[in-house]
Image (tube, rainbow, N blue to C red; front, side, top):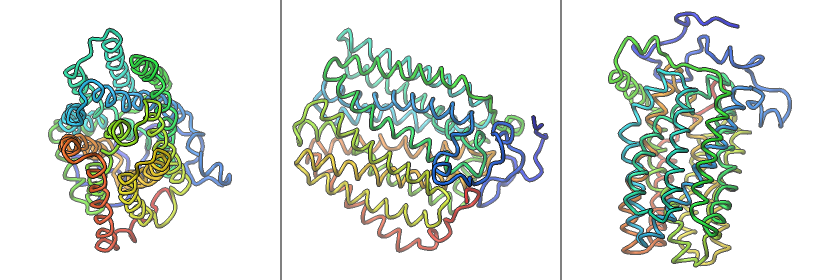
Length: 453
């Protein structure tokens, strides 16, 4: 086993000024201990290029753990909005529940990033998954007994929103430590592929369970979270930069992360591009129950299929990015995906036919996931290894802002209707990406593969 020195020769610490751009400093990483064989581009053909990261045992445990966790999340993503709308009949209540989850995510994002950089990431992941399972079980029992009310959903969402900021940055930050720098792009895309696989299967299952007995959907979510926690036990212990972080307090750690992100033009731009899409585009999924009930007039199984078609498109998008993780011109593909996302939102808002809506949802999943996967890979490639957790916490913060837009959008849906609201957002996104493509052409030329090439 390789022994890690107290301070790798080329590594910068959080207390110092990190490199302004480019991939993380090489140094001797825990990946050198956790991976088998040299970490380099595979010569085993298309199959190895596509699934190469899964040859690493630690990443396989993480991949399967993420697979189970995403099944639980998808069950909740579909069942919770359905339950909120079923109880209240109001899109504004949908926004209130989403806001209750988003505000804690926003508040605790930076703390979760610091924790991911300081502590044992394996223990953090197992603990957070166990808590999410407990929350799903509590919801299932409330639904099963008929005691569920809107305030229960709000309270449970607050706790859930407190857990996610510790889980998501930790899961992302552990990937490079398991697979090494050169396989990182492929591993991130494969991780997204595993998550999107459950965006195909879980929604259909959730719709069926909601039609049979709503409590079953939440019991299933609790079961998947438990399986994820048990699977993650197989992960190796991967600590953050505890020695360096011990020299300064958590507040200073957070400030270092913020200065690092916003002090680099490429990282700051990538975060901004994620922010716009998450804030404006992604909330459309929260309003699918409104389209299901008021526009397309289908049952709960039909709602599950709507989410499933988004998942199929997302699966294709992330799997494509796993193959092309080291390709040139990814920035241009990202912009094209953003334009496609906005255009598909407009098409979906105009559709009143269920089969056509399913086809457009397929395109929505493909464009949105292709966009976000490329953005995620580029962020990690341009981040110092010692700051993975904190940088991903800033990225997580962009997702926590999504529920903040769901509440006013929900009120707008109640006033002017879901089609007009979603269509207006699609027009804004399409125009935004056309402007970005014209103004920041220099950025897309610079977004060439680094260590993943």
